[in-house]
Length: 320
Image 1 (spheres, rainbow, N blue to C red):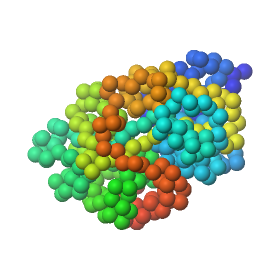
Image 2: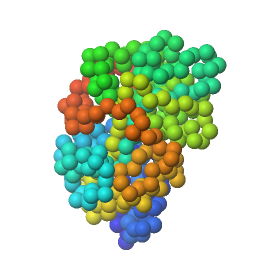
Image 3: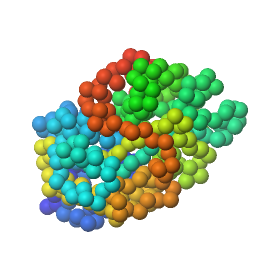
């Protein structure tokens, strides 16, 4: 009888599906039971199931919730070899004592539908501050940071760029122009691509994927600078199938496996130094990135405090 591996995937569905198929092809004795959930949803499930976990391994999604799970003792070291990984991926492992390991990186940005903004004679945004302008009223879509790791990265980015008080003022001003807060971080750019909203906030690699499919999306690296994510993989504390989970982590860190991501339109920067970087992937060296403090913003206390302030001072008038 085949072993089972219960996997939660917080990357895009096509990438999740490809990873599972490739892993099962190499490991025919392991049957992967995969479900896709956002990072916020996954963290909530792991907390609720502490002591009796239903999940073995968590792959993908922004690193902050992975670090919070590690801090709370909800995940365990995988023992994986990180010697081939880039510094930012090893840093994730160092911060978490080996409980979360970086698998990809991606910068936060703005996308806009060129046809919509041209039709409505709206000057495109170049900076975060532009999104506060009334010309964008009803035109912006972004995720809710309570459920979305992408949106929590945005929240933490604003705090690091502008200071906590000013960040809330700016996010509230942008909120006046938001037509919808989505559950998923990639949903706003998909809506902008389809012409359902004029502007989105999200990760630039997701925007590149849509632009590569021919949608009229332009991508902006905000002038003030921007934050970035390090996607991670973690094994759950008390995992019932630790050996299979460990095999998944080792598989996910391999250069040849990470090099396959562009096959399904995933253009994040891979963490293995020997993996091939797709030409479509955002060039992180050319983007004004902040020195993102993963240790601070990946802590439970910081996340809970910032989300409470966001709920009180920005808020989603129509939570999903």
